[in-house]
Image 1 (cartoon, rainbow, N blue to C red):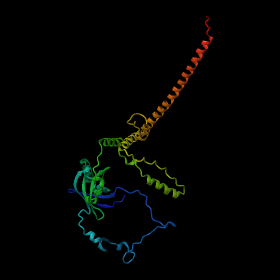
Image 2: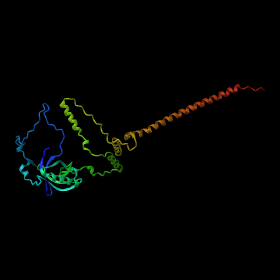
Image 3: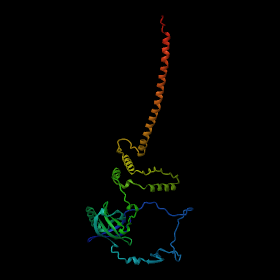
Image 4: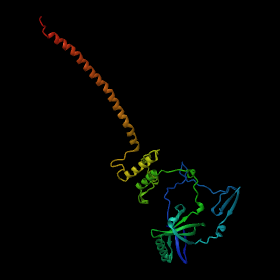
Length: 332
């Protein structure tokens, strides 16, 4: 790493010489604009919009637009005369609890390394800061700009986090904030249950930039001249449910299933809400079919019984007539 700034941490009457290093770096894959036909780099010339001449860096100054075509020109001498009392120092203003600093204010992070004989006071400040469980609020000037920052300990090193000024944070102005929306207690309880089912410990290394990895694969394939394989598409997320409680319940069950836990309703796979509703609607239809089949079968049974009775009735007179003919006649 290369130091981008040198100065001193002013801690009361103690001055600690330090070097400043960027603590983070972007891993985005960068591209150049090129001519499609031959791959030549596209260059842009710095030309003046008034005279049309090409301008070198030495002839470029900073201008503040007043509007209406008027411009105020500022030179390096103008910036050098600005009253930056902290131009070569990190002035500690106060120590505050870390939770009182809103994370939205954090901007960039820098490591501080002790310089020369400043190692012992550096370690002293580091250990005292760690024991206090607080962060130091400081002012520092980096690249001709005074900034508010915090000083805290990370992995045995002092870490400087520059911050935005309070007036640089926008105020959210959205219509729904003025609406009187009520959340029902059961919905809130189910949402809390979902949060509990998805709770865990944060391990940054467990997350990767899949887009960057896939893009690097495409670049490597172009270099090697091999066929580019399309990555498998992930399953589309289910459509949002109209019933908020149903969606929350389904989310809880899915989170539990992902963790290998038994669903809240008992052992076995959780039944999707849509399937449960379909089964509920299908049950009465089955009963109706059975009922109709029973009603249709009943008249058929009655008809068969009626025919049997009529047949027996027809046989009875025939039998009596036969018996009458066979009987002997009485003589006078």
